[in-house]
Image (tube, rainbow, N blue to C red; front, side, top):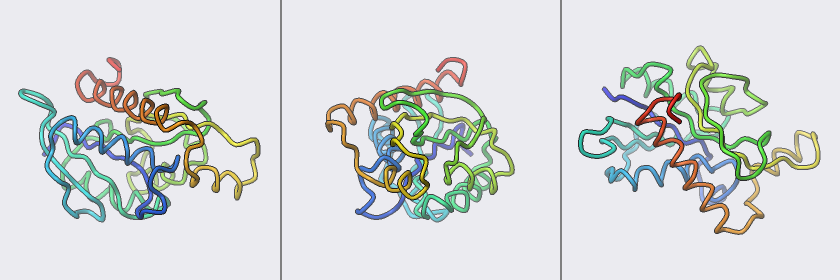
Length: 185
């Protein structure tokens, strides 16, 4: 059993590395390194690492589903069940096109904003009332679904230093949730 199941959303494969849709994977990697967690192992159709956030800290599991984004719930739901984590202690790290680049918001529940990963999570977990760190990646100047998909699956156009700072800031927000709860973040 763990206190928190932290889930970084992304797509597996090198072709998706450093894309907007994979920012959750990057944040998960920063947290795992920050907390000194062991190398992840293949489990629950994902990569899972477990440990504590430090001496006397929370017990955490970090999961990076290795399904594609549309099916992440098929990885997260079994992990949540096996680890016996309450739904409000599942913390999902994800990209959010409805927030400007660089903006970070934390909340429990809310709408799905057309995000296929969130839709899959709601379907498999039975509710959207999980905790979230929403990471603003900006929106393309269109609502065309194909162009929006190409945008989120594309690499950041912002300077790499700004993206790295965004990832660090989002990791800070996630760490505050784990240590202090949603209200403290």
